[in-house]
Image (cartoon, rainbow, N blue to C red; front, top):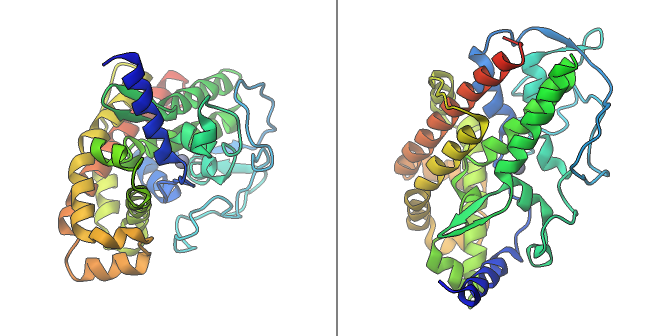
Length: 327
Ligand SMILES: [Zn+2]
């Protein structure tokens, strides 16, 4: 494909993103809480320390939090149940490892990556958060930095542990978990089929449907974690660790697997909702469809993504925490 054709396609692709707003694969706190349950030492208490880091990344300082927020459920998903997972206040200025990983894993969706200048074509995207939380692979095109975000915070976490700052070691690690969890969401790896993406240039309705399909998938995980039966919980708890050679391979495997499930999941969502994707699908609608038995195929596919994603993240955590001497 010659350069001008590539540029035209790239331009068309970016038209899709104009209407894009926030895209959180919601429920990070619950997903993380279950993933870390079989890690050794998660009850170890860690003393809260001040932030003392010089970073390469810029953030939206209005939303970046550098103080401890334990006990406030500060970053928890707004459509969660308000009870789970637990978030007790700090005791003697210390927090257990499980709590640091849990409460800070949703933090990057709180606005720290919004409103920044991250990409030359960002004016067309209108949202820098997507640049850091997604990584599209569409044919030969690879766009955005979700994988780099994961690796960035793995490195920062390593640096914190090297200077014996366990609190920030775990807090940065929680952010790393956020980005690799985001990449387990199929819609963080592709916005739609190739022809749909091209179609968005001519029909804004397609773009709206793709966005709503993405939102639906984000919220469907919340439904499975908070409001459905215990299957999602059991799938995560039962996932066996999967190991890879290096941190790049962990995140690559996550992206490859999630993308390999994209067509199936996307087709099923379109078959289930059709024209209803013109509107946002609420949790209540999801519950109704589930009760009518219409979501069984989607549930099976989503649980398989959740299972293997949990395996990858468990393997990564064991590898990483061993390398920094925490387990
Ligand atoms: Zn995110």
